[in-house]
Every structure is written in structure tokens, then in C-alpha cells.
Image (cartoon, rainbow, N blue to C red; front, side, top):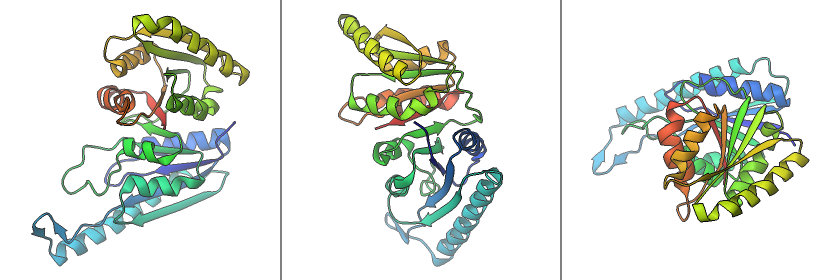
Length: 276
């Protein structure tokens, strides 16, 4: 199992240095081809009840062209020594950005993106909500937090729940887990469900072993904040990477995108790989 094509999403109006460095390292490690992509929405003629002048719209168009040009230059510099095929794509679209990127990832094995800044009134058209992207892409999404530019894979924590999303996430992460120094497989459950959790973990540990991955099972009692507890365990484990299922609103989306992303990923060194 491997990644043969990596799609790298570059956020406009912010540095993508860490994303590009990690993507370049993974492309070399997996001998993968790389597709870089930048996408944004144009300024709308009408915003609410306010009409935007033609001069502002033209200024926005010129800024978009320059931002995309800068992003492409950074991408091509990062992958100038890449041995696999390298492709660049960009678009200005009125479509929702996560959905557009999800469609473009049809030929990718892995998507790499940075965490977006809190968008202001005028840069919301430039930045992609990574939670929405992961929910729509049908591909694993590796989210690189700010100030992170390395993915050592010395220690990996996998957040396990006996659900389709978690099974998809761990299967998508196998190429990385096979290269990890230590893998901790964590299930968080209520006290009465801990025996079942240990049984679940034993099955998954055995499945991973068949793929050459040795994993340490950890069944931890819930404290009512599963995302926060997973973040604590990841810190205690000194994890370089956290793997988790991306859950929809009908279940535990907060597992991946509330507690983990907002409360710990943005201020940590850990990357997060999610699948839905």
C-alpha cells in the first residue's frame, strides 16, 4: 500500500512553506507524483445590500492573479527536484471551495493542506474550510498546522472508534503507519464499554500486524470530552501524527474538527490525518 499521487492545496494570502516541505518529503518517500492546486472565489458584485464598484472588482481580480502566480512559484520551487510527475492547477470559481477541491482530488491518493486562518470579511473567499474538505473529498486529508514543517513519523496516535469513518481513516493511513516508529491505537469509551473496547483494539492490532505494523492498544475511560482526551493522549505520547475519522454532524464531528483542530492542532506540532 502506498501513495502514488499527492494533491497539495495551497491557501492564498498565507505562507504554505510547511505544507510544501512536508509534501515534498512525502513525495520523495513514496516516489509519488504531485499536483499542486490553488482556488478562490472572485469578489461578488453585490455583498448583502452593498454594491461593489468596478474598480474594486478589478483590483480583486489583479490581486487574485498575483496571489495564484506567487503560489505557483512557491510550488514549483518546492518540487523542482521531484522525480515524479508534477502538475499545477488553479481556478477562480463561484463554486464552494471545499466541493471544488474535492472534485479535483478524484485522481489523488492523499490531499495535503494547511489549516486555514480565521477568515476576515475579505479573505473568506481565499481560504478553504478543511473540515468541509475532508467530509467531501473521499480521500484522506493530511492537515498541517501552522509553524509545522516536518512529519517525522517517529510516533503516531490513531483515534479508534468502531465506525466506518475510523476504519476508513486507519486503512488510508497504512502507508504512513508502515513507516512509523511507534503506533498507539487509542479507543476512548465509557467505563462499562471498556471490555468491548479492548476486544475491538485487539482485532485492529491483529489486522495491522498483517500489514507489518506493530501497534500498542490503549483503552481509555471517557471523561466526557473525547476530543480533548485524545489530544492529551497524543501529547503524552509525543505524537508526530494523529489519525482520526472525520465524523458528520449526526455523530461526533467534534472528535476531529472541534476539540482536536481548534483546541490542540492549531497550537501543536502534530499533523492530523482524517478520512470520512
